Amino acid sequence: MSVPVVSIFSTADYEGQIRRAADLLAAGRLVVLPTETVYGAAGLLTKPEALAALKRIRGGGSGQASPTTPSSDDSAGHAKPFTIHLADPADAAAVLGDVGDLGRRMMRKLWPGPVGLVFDVPADRRAAVAAALGVAEGDLYDRDGTITLRCPDDLVAQEVIGRAGGPVVLTAAGGGASSSQASPAADIARTLDGQVDLVLDAGPTRFHQPSTILRVTGDGYKIVRKGVYDERIVERLLRTTILFVCSGNTCRSPMAEAIARHLLAEANGVPDGQLEQKGITVASAGAYAMPGSRATPAGVDAVKALGADLTTHRSRQLTPELIHQADMIFAMGRGHAAAVAAMAPSARSKVATLDPEGDIEDPIGGDPGLYQSLAGELRRLIERRLSERELLRAT
Image 1 (cartoon, rainbow, N blue to C red):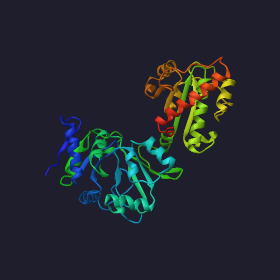
Image 2: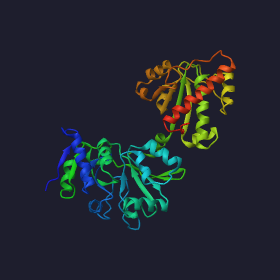
Image 3: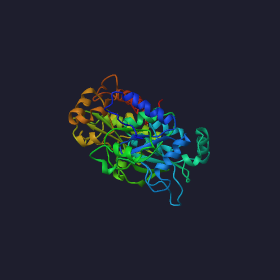
Image 4: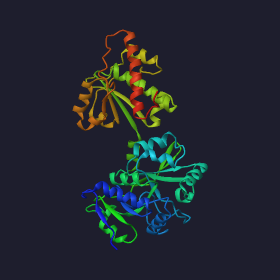
């Protein structure tokens, strides 16, 4: 017997081969899929024959590591469940309980990507999910009540998993550090001949090392296994930085910064000054600013009426460093958006005007009523923009 190996990006029938792989999984067979870290033998958790075959490949306690768990057995020698691989981060809700603000942020910021997340799941939820899927609870959740999930950043894996019709689990088949120069698919096919029905070859893996495993623990997390991302990278990825840009950084952008910080602090249940502890940074800058200037007094008063504080603001100039640190940049006008793009062309995709309809006029020199009207308009636009990015609930 010889396992078919399909060079998925060279085939003339890409869609057909993706369907072929998904159909094999749905029928209880095994398929080797690429991910960005390793290749894995995949099967449907709900198919007993597939689960048994994956356990044989894993070695039934031999210690061979799966793609996203440190080992196949715990310290007491109990077989650990396979990691469920998701086509979309939203699919995680089907097997989880309430994961809290941090858990939701970690899924939003780290997935898709080379990170496995370990969540605690309440006993009643575990029992209900296992019953609904028709699987043993121990094949889905670990003995300590946790589940490990991964959403790979690989197009082929995502498309096959999304069409398989059930929870897909993987165990490592190869393609790690030793496969940086060539695809491991042929070697995997020889090793697993007679045990899998198809190998989808997408070339060498992107990272050539295992995924990072993080256990979510209430308001924190700990690294279970170091991999592609170290703690420094994880911390940087988990932080959300929002930057507002205008001309002088004394009216529009600082008002927007103060209003956004207040809205986000309220949404996260903390005072404005503690928003950073929730992993969210809000900043502002001016494309033509003179550093160190205070906010316009009328602007300070206008945002104070909305519960925001602008008394300690000092203007600063837009820099490439600020641009690259930001996850999203909202410009007060199209000229400011162009200034950001000119300073850092690679950041163009994360820049938008705060008002999709056009520019927000500079209120400098206007009366207090103009600033009050601007503050209300900024709040409306900020609520809309942050709701679009799931940082606030839509109002």
